[in-house]
Amino acid sequence: MVERGVGGLLEATQNVMSMRVVRALVSAAEKAGAQRAPLLAAVPLAPTALEEVDTGISFAQTYGLLDAIIKQTGDPAFGLHCMGLLGPGAFNPVTALVFHAPDLRQSMTSLQRGLCLLASGVTIKLEEVGRTATIRCPSLPGASPVVQRFAAEMMVLGLRRRVALFRSGAHFERICFAHPAPTYREEYDRTFKQQVSFGEPFSGLVFDREFLDARSPQGDAELHSELASFSERKIRQLARGASYEDRVRRVVLRHASPRHADMKSVARELQLSERSLRRRLAEEGKTFAQVTEEALASAAKAFLRERQLSIHETAFALGFLDRAAFHRAFRRWTGTTPLGFCQQDQEP
View (cartoon, rainbow, N blue to C red):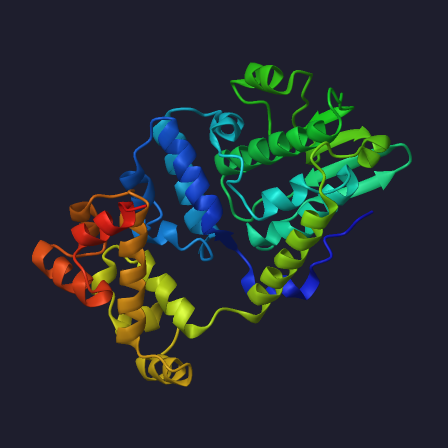
């Protein structure tokens, strides 16, 4: 049996879902007809927070988001359908890491190791016994049955596609789900193209062990090695914990009105006194005002550069109800106006 092998490195980051996953799920839901604003309100999460891809939200917030996605899309089988709405690199660097592994066994081992970059404390288990291999998906702690089903559908389908990439036309001995058969069970047969069983001890796949030796048609040993090294650095960084500057940035950008996030409320969310937070930021050579300004500037430039929001929408998302105040702040941050910044960014 191959164990998760991450051990104590995960202890510092338990119960956090990567913003990369959150952003991908919101994007997929939008393609299915959902509206971003009410989805983020269910978390709650400021629009600017989606740009902080190296941050995360709690599992409890993630569950609220998934419930909102299912309700807004009106699609109880969205866990099966969302995979087709995700971009090819939605969960990078983990997607690229498992994609370029030389064979399926190394791909699964890389996924076991790297999955904590997407959801801390969550991983798959790969068992090799006799002539069969079994991949078991984890359950999500404290999640409702609807959310558990969503996660199981998404994970099992993603794993099935991963195996099929290495072993074209692979037939699985069993495709299992721990939850009872839903009302849309025929959608499972259509999606998986074979019989699926419900009410099993675990959600996952059982297949011929020989599949694990299958070579990848897209394997790149050198790139895989580089991605593995990058992922290891990221895992160690998570284990050490973020700087207080990064923690403050995250809290500020999660605020419903980032411009109005004050030191008292941020310190309370970080479970510190204002005095302690001030001292710890000073040890890093920063003040609360500096960190807040830098976070707002970074988010504003990202929104305008990627054309995700208009100038007015960007100002509102950051908490500027007065357009003139936003223009003054943006000029202070960048030396130019929001319109001037957009025009410069369009130049070849």
